[in-house]
Amino acid sequence: MIRFERAADGSLVAFLADNAERKGAPFTKTRLRGDSLFLQSDRMNAQFRGILSVRQGVIEGRWSQGERSATLTLTPVEERAADETASTTPPRPQHPENPYPYRTEEVTFRSEADGVTLAGTLSMPDQEGPHPAVVLLQGSGDNGRDYAYRGHQFFLVLADHLTRHGIAVLRYDLRGVDQSEGRLSGASLEDLARDAASALRFLKERPSIEAGSVGLIGHSMGGMIAPWIHEQFQDAAFLALLSPPSLPGHEVLSQQKARIADVAGASPAEVDSIRKQSRRIFEILRSDRDSAGVASQLRPILREGGARDDRLQLRVEANTSPWFRDFARFDPRPSLRQADVPTLALFGERDVLVPPQQNADPMRAALADSPSERMSVRVLEGLNHWMQPAKTGRSSEVAEIEMTIAPEVLEQLTMWIRDSVGFE
Image (tube, rainbow, N blue to C red; front, side, top):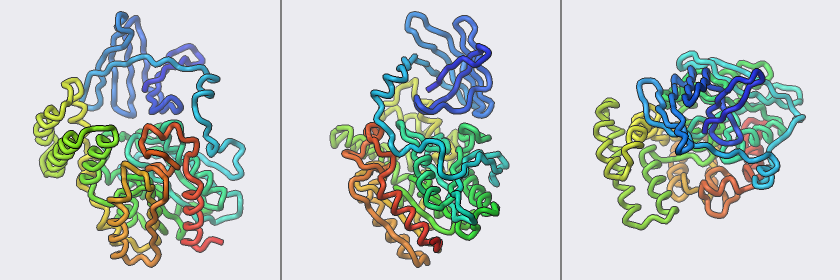
């Protein structure tokens, strides 16, 4: 979604937003001349050039990012009045409002991956320190520090609860998102892991933080790579994993595609076809071929699967990105077997993206082989992938749920962290 606003001087400013409630950093240049629109983002190394089609009421153009480009059509979306939006959007009773009963600080730190500056919010208890602390790790996607999705701000709620209970929290914008520098497109899984390791190190160096009591809380992909971060890049005092995939990435994604199709009402034959296509795709992605070689093999498979010509190149680019290929190859179990700190894994019974039926037992088996003396794997009744009380577990249901995070999840996390670090 691209949002347009008028600045105080009357100039037009465009923002790339992931939803109607949160706008990201503005485009570096926004220029509208006659029926021609030009947008440029230095941060994303991207440009858009488009022409207004009066007959269709859309802006048709081309989006270019790095060496890649694709056609893009901007369709106007009517913004509802604030009172109308309020009447149709479910309340978010857990979203905190200022003044907070704790301190917050806007912070920056440099990533050991390539030196880019990452920005975030550090929330600190009002009590005298030093304090135990956590770094929050988002799932996949271009996520900001509050981890906003379908009207919820998951990490804002989580940070608020933990800080009110004596635990300092650092949440940050992923590279290339909002106030963080760098580019998310083109980043590898290791780049993201090193970013998180740098966040851990940043907290440990703060005098108000107890350096030996800094851990990680990761959701989805963040939970999948947290043990790897601890093993390879920077020690954590504890690991709390929410809805963490416990199998190799290619298996997780293949299962997700088939399950989403099944939940959406696809026939058994269609689900089986999707599963077979996914296996072929991931076999190619896991190979040692370069991106050009992989792309040439993917195109005919994606066409067979019904990919439209105008979307084909975007699908190919998404599948050949460094992060996606890394994720397809990544297996979290070796790092789980090396976990030597307290480790907690929470799964939602109604999670259709990372179902506990396929992930809880592999998690238990891997941790059983680890040297950790304190581990727990729990499946929480009635919760979805986002740790919300849910009826179906579908992503489309998330916006309709008032509760951002189930209270039992917040309570279990808080008690478990305090016990793990010996915090009274």
